Image 1 (cartoon, rainbow, N blue to C red):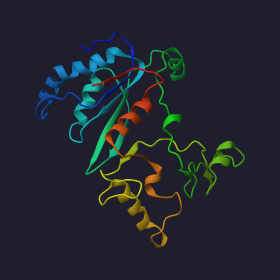
Image 2 (image 1 turned 90 degrees about the vertical axis):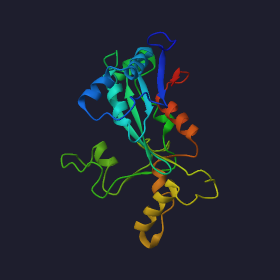
Image 3 (image 1 turned 45 degrees about the vertical axis):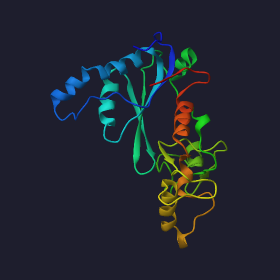
Length: 241
């Protein structure tokens, strides 16, 4: 049991999720897992987190489904999965939230500081938001004079000074990449190469590289720092397991 009082922490960051030994290939094995010691870890995290607090779990590509079962069974609500693309493969990062105690997210934030994501601190700078050819919301009932009609008209570019909304896809450079360029096999360089191959004459417009729409990291610690910044209120308490 964690040495923390009930409802005292703002975020839980799980880097090594507790899993059952062996493969869960039958209903009996899954039921045994849900009744085993691994799930008690999730329940203890549920106990120490404030209402509306987020739990972030860096789960393996072959075991994230098992971790999700355990987290759900402890009472957490599933919010999203962040697809983190590193070298050589991808890593699912599960995002859950302890149920709200208040009736709305806004009231929960005012009461405990938890419940919402810190979008403003995690916006992606330098990436304009562009609508597709038919408009982001091609709704025939939307009037051209309305705010939606003006913001999402065909071919419009809605500039957000503080940057784009953070995506649920993140990229990590290969070890050895620096400001001078990327190494072969770097996920960032590969994405830009695919975008360039589809462009006219193999050229990209300034600021229109494929990777510019996603958060990029050079180290695993930068990934953890970003996850904490996204889910934790200023000055909040983070439980790391």
